[in-house]
Image (tube, rainbow, N blue to C red; front, top):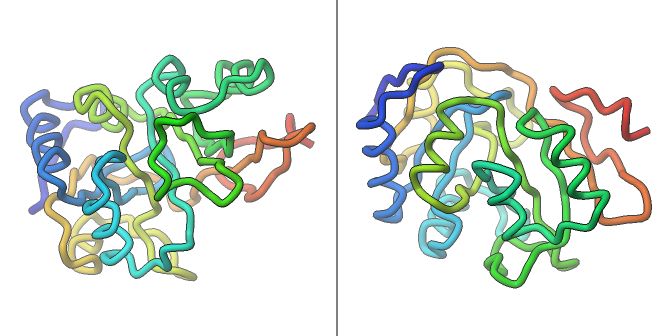
Length: 201
């Protein structure tokens, strides 16, 4: 189903409906500050397996997740000084930072190097959703491999069968996040996207 939500002031009852779906192990689509994403509860392995299935992704492909704040992210990302300062400076914003995972991060979303991608999107709906759930939401772009992300929430519902809910907050962007690896001695730009990466060169 499609649930229209106010992009600037998301209605609590609509956010609660989406949280119910996530807590029930469902996969939903939701807006971010860059593109629409597909996601589920980070701590529900069956839901993550279902997300891989719905998107048609190989299980070897790593998934990022969305947090509500830097304070929440610190539970899941090893906060070296440079990581903390980068998070405080750039987040919330259109970035995904690859960082070392803490022990509580489920192995299914970790890379072989025990790293994870962490996002804090600058979008009221995403922040309200993660805050209401109380834990991170897995995040992957609502697009098939090699294709442009969907702008229309109805297209998302048509393309990805098995979604429980699409939170429709109107149009977002077409350019995905910039991805920056913070695990080495200096930042490495993995993908240049919506965020300005000049400070990482």
